[in-house]
Image (tube, rainbow, N blue to C red; front, side, top):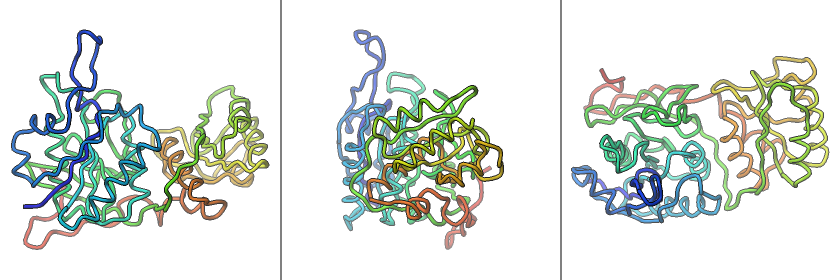
Length: 347
């Protein structure tokens, strides 16, 4: 039987409704969460690791490095075949990408949680946890980096996005689609990750900001971020990388002071580029020295920029970290498993 470490950090999956508090609050520890998922011990020998009951919206970089170190130790343990991280879903697209950038082990790392609390009669936590353990125990997920598994769907960390505040199928890869699914208790992959972004560091730069472009915007917000000492700023531009010229002028002032500026799009999918050359168009941002962030969303670009700056990367090295690695997404069709069914989408 495979052996899977399950790292518990809290989140909705650990919460129950409290009349006294007037809402859901962290309550269940790892053992209690596992007890609510009958049959899970038949999927793998579980190694529970409790790291607290922290709402995901309270996470700090320090906490993410702590969890990352725990994941790394589990991957280094020859007796462990895979790792599951259980957390709140609010920032799961950022945390999963954070660990995806840092970890270089081959063993599967699966991040999961729940959209409904343990008090809800339709609680999705137990199903998500069982699916996550199935994926962490499956050799097909080796070398695929960090994945997010909820609602029976396997999504890669660098594209997964929370598309709805509360829907069960909120997590989607809007650019490339899912890596696969868990269907009738079986892990089915439709593609392979291919090359990934990587950075080796034990610190993240503090104060990296996101500035989102909008109608009738000047450069005051970006000027303020630079004045407050931001070492890097992500600009989530409209469309394919366009802003008002005033915002670009503010970015040029910031870059002249050594602030790293990355350009992405505020759209839910797609990327910023150099297709438009009017003042404030993407081409003028690139000519001014802004770094293109490929298909990364604003929050993901901020994670990459903070870790890159923390690693001491500048200029071309930072640009390479932000850029899509050799194209984008799962570029290799998953091969059928020896003696198993074809790797195709379930019925």
